[in-house]
Image (cartoon, chains in turn blue, green):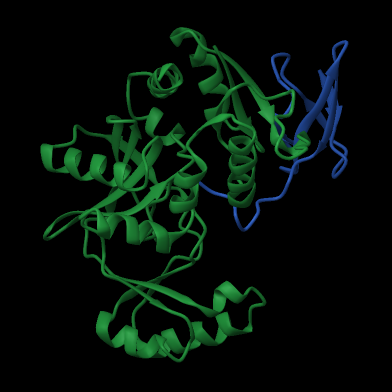
Length: 57
Length: 282
C-alpha cells in the first residue's frame, strides 16, 4: 500500500500486513505517521503523536 | 476468553502480545484508547471484560485503568499498581516498607529544603522527576554549585511538581543495571542493561543494550519482593549491583521488553500472556 509524506513529499510504502494504529516512518525525512484507516487496499495515514513528557514504561 | 490490549501507541510489544494470546487460549484484540468514549461508569463496547493495559502515556495509563476498573473490567496491571509505579515517591515508600533494599531517598517540598537534604545524602546525588521514564531528566549532581543551578532552572518551570524535589543517593555500580521482567510470582526474563558510550544511564530508550543472565537466589528474592511490594502483575523491576547487595531503584508498570527479547531465545510475550490467562481464570 502506498502513501505519501506530507512533510517532504516522498512516497511511503506501507507494508501489506500493517494494522490500524501502527506507526510508519518516512524513510526520507523520518516523519512519523500512524495508520488511521485501511480499506479496500488503500491506506490513510495521520501524523503520529509526538513523544510526550509523560511517555515511558 | 477475550482480552483487550489497550494502547495509545502501537509498539512491537503490543503486537507481539496479541500474537502470543492464541497460544494460551485467549482471544486478543488491540484497542486504541485514543478513540474510546467512556460514559462513566459504563464499559465502552470496544472493551472486553479483561484488559492488558499498555498505554505509553503515564496519564492516559492511569485514567484509562481507573475508568476501566470503574466499568468492571479486570485490568492488568490494576489502577492501584499503576499509581504506585508511576510515582517515584510512592514506589520508594512501597519498597522501603516491604524491606526491599533501595537507595536512600529524600523528598523536599521547597527548594529551600534541598540543601539540608543534600548535606545528608552527600555528593554525588541523583535528582529525579516524580514521574517519568526512560531515564528522562534523571541527573547526577556532583556538587553543590551544580545543584544550585539546577534548582534555579527548575524553579523557572511552570509545572508545580518541578518545585518539589526527589533525590537519591548515588549507588556505585558497574556500568550496567538489571532489568527483570516479572509476571505474577515468576521472573519471565532477566537481563543486564549496559549504558551506551558516553552515557551513565542504562535505559534501552537511551541506547542501552541487553544481555540475558540467570538470576541468583538473592536477586530472585529481591525482584519478586519488589514486584509484590507494588501490588504485583506484569512488571519491569530495575535493580543495581551495589557493594552491599542488590538494590531496586524502579518498578515499571508498562514494561517494554523488545530489548530483553533480543537477548533471550524464548518467547517473552507468550510467558506474559500465560500469566494474563491464569489471572483471568481466578
